[in-house]
Length: 106
Image 1 (tube, helix red, strand yellow):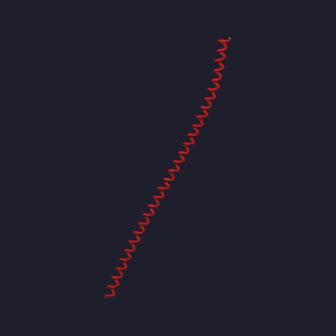
Image 2 (cartoon, one colour):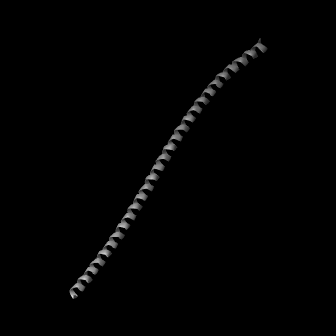
Image 3 (cartoon, rainbow, N blue to C red):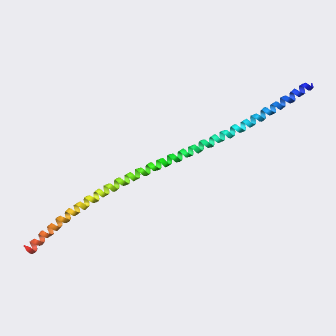
């Protein structure tokens, strides 16, 4: 009978150790899972920031290109206006000289 009691005590001790090991394993796995989740979140945040920066740069580049196109177009139009004004100025001077000569020199 003493032997049976010893076997029961040993079985209880073994069961307790198994439960403790299982609890420790459970805690380790939970900790590992939490760490993996944190790593995944961190990586996702980094990827999102990189994508945001990339899209922002692309948008700025597009705006810069559009601005340059507008400036080139405006410069071209201004050049045309200056050219026409210069031609008109020459024509106006010639016209006034003719009228002056007709009126006074005659």
